[in-house]
Image: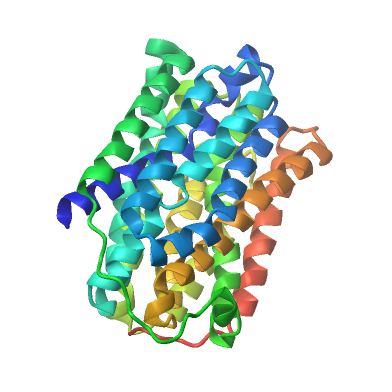
Amino acid sequence: MRPGIAALVLAYVLSQFYRAFLAVLSPILAVDIGATAENLASASGFWFLAFALMQIPVGVALDRVGPRLTTAGLLAVGGIGAAVFAMATGPGAINVAMVLIGMGCAPVLMAAYYIFARSFSPVVFGTLAGVVIGIGSLGNIAASLPLSLAVEAIGWRGAMWGLSGLTLLTAAAVWLLVRDPERVIHTSKGSLLDLLRMPALWPILIMMATCYAPAAGLRGLWAGPYLTDVFQADAARIGVVTLIMGLAMVAGNFAYGPLDRLLGSRKWLIFGGNALAVACLLGLYAFPAASGFLPVALLAGVGFFGSSFPMVMAHGRAFLPPHLVGRGVTLINLFGIGTTGLMQIATGHLQAALPQSPPEAAYAGLFLFYAGFTALGLLIYLRAQDRTD
């Protein structure tokens, strides 16, 4: 089982890369193919929406077909999407490529979670979930300074061709190494509607919808334009800052994992961490053009405290019946990724509509929007039942 899990973790490294790499490429794509910040916001949103819309069929496939075939087949589609990106001559082709890549990445994390839920004790689910995201976040790091160095060396098209080949090779590794858990034999067929009828899941679904969008949006999209427009940062400096934020997200994923057992609560760990993320967003709103290390530290804070995704997943997993684990974890993921995709598109329009002078004004509005959005989720999450297995 370990080689198969390793292959899935490598695939998740790629998934994390693909959701974050546009921030570094944004200045180059603007010059080469005329892709504006709003164009790239839409393209990033299409990645998340394609990823999210695939969650329901992926959940059914995990329960009925298994993680091996589901993941290998769709990941190959992602490799084709990276090739389309490498050949792009305009924003339209970037949109198509991001849709294909989003589809390809859709089953990766959920396949690993499905195996954990079916093959390991529920007590360690949160820790294992955090470890996978923590290691997978190396892709987030690779999409920062390492990507900017690769682009300088071989160009962005060469880098994307290399990523296409690596994605196809990883799909082959998943096909060869992953082993499906034994199927659950259950007298009840069950459906997505059974999950949606569970009142205990709804506050968790809302929390998932609101906790991931700010960190994903800033790291994967807005950090680049923000640093360029407000601080006149070049690609190398953007790479360094996004590397710092990526490292903070890795640390956050590892930190959340074991803390539920140490604190004896998942609910209040998630609530407290995301309240601190809101405080960092409000700091960015108040001081969007501050000199020195403050904006970088606040971005890193959003990344660290906003990395509660695996713990929210573990909280929801505790309420899922065994025969609906595949559909359950993908439903929770749908709320997180789908909302993030919508937020990417919405914030693209919002940033374009906000005052552009001084340049930090529009970004201050974005930071305030994200803070209010997460705070609303926290208010609803107060009604959640705590459960730690």
